[in-house]
Image 1 (cartoon, one colour):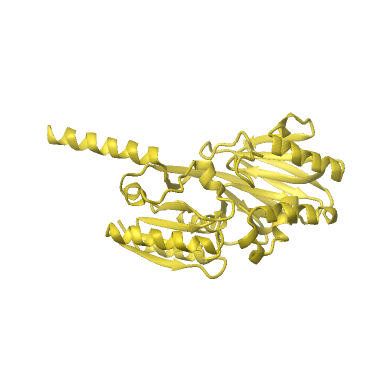
Image 2 (cartoon, helix red, strand yellow):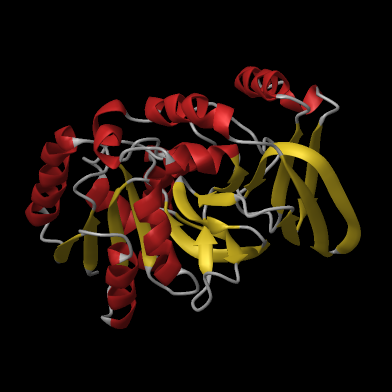
Length: 324
C-alpha cells in the first residue's frame, strides 16, 4: 500500500488544518507509507493524481471539497488507483451521496479492509475545452446556478460556506434572463425537445445538489449508467423563485413546468452562450454534449459498516484457509 495525499489548503476554511494534521499523524502511527502534495491553483489535483497513476500508488486520498475531488477524478478515471475522499470542503456532496463518515480514526482499517465501490462519472465535451475528457461526479448545472458560482468570491467562500452560493444566486438573478434550450437525446436516440424559456438545467449523475438534503435529480443513481436531466420551465422571475422553494420542499417534480428525463447521452444547445458549472466549479459555456460513463471510478467507502463487513469477510476467509 502506498498513499498519495492531496490537500487543498483552502477547502472548508482554516479550521480544517488541525484535522488534516491529525490524518497525517494517524497514517504515521500505523506506518502507512504516504506522500503529501498541496494544491496551489486549479488543475494541480489532476496533475498530482496523474502522477500517482504513473508512480505506482494504490490510493489517492483527497483532503478537499467536491471541486478538488472532481479534479483528481479526471486522472483517476479508468485507472486501478482508488480514490479516498475525505469530506473537508464547503458542501461535501459526494460524501453525502455515498454516506461517507467524517470519522478518521478508522482510516487505517478502512484503507486495509474497506469496501470499494466503482461509480459512474458524467463526461462533458465542449468545443471551447477540447483535449482531455472532462468529468463530473455529481452534476452539471446550466444557467442560474452557474451564474451563482461565477459570482462567488473564493476568500468569502472560506468563511461563509455554501450560504454564499445562495446569496450570490439571489444577488445575480435579476441580471440573468431566461434562455431557450434544445435537448438532443443521443443514446438511446430519441426525440428533440425545445424549451422556450428556462432559467436552469441540471444534469445529474447523483441526487445530491447544493446543500445536504436537497435533491434536484432526485431519481438519479451514481452507478446506474444514466444521466438525469431536470429542466425548469419558468415564465418569469417569480415563477423561477417558486421552483426554488419547491426544490427545497422536495416537491418540484410535481410541477408540470418541470421536465425530467433520463438518458445515456445528450447534446444541449441554447439560443446564446450560457455558463456551465461542474460540481460547483465554473467550467465554460454552451453548447455541450454530456454522456454517462458507467463504473469508471473506484472509490473507497469511508463508512463503519463497510470496514466491518470487509473485516468479517477477511476473517472468515482466513479461518477457511486454516482448515483447508
